[in-house]
Length: 78
Image (cartoon, rainbow, N blue to C red):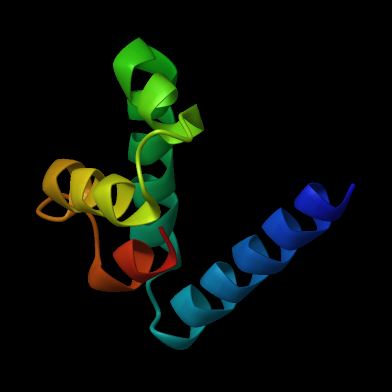
C-alpha cells in the first residue's frame, strides 16, 4: 500500500511539473515510451527488480536508454 501511495505522489509531482512547463503531451509520450520499453524488455525488467545492481547503476542504464529520447524533467523523476 505504501508503495502505491508513493507512486501516486511521484506521478502527481511529475504531472504538476509538466503542467507548469506546458509539457503535458511530451511528458505523456515520454511515459508511454518508458512503459513500452520496460514492458517489452525482459532484461530491463530484471535489471529494475534486481537487488544486485545499485541504484546508481540503474540510473546510469536509464540515462543511457532514455536520456536522449525523453525530456530532462521526465528524466529527473526516473
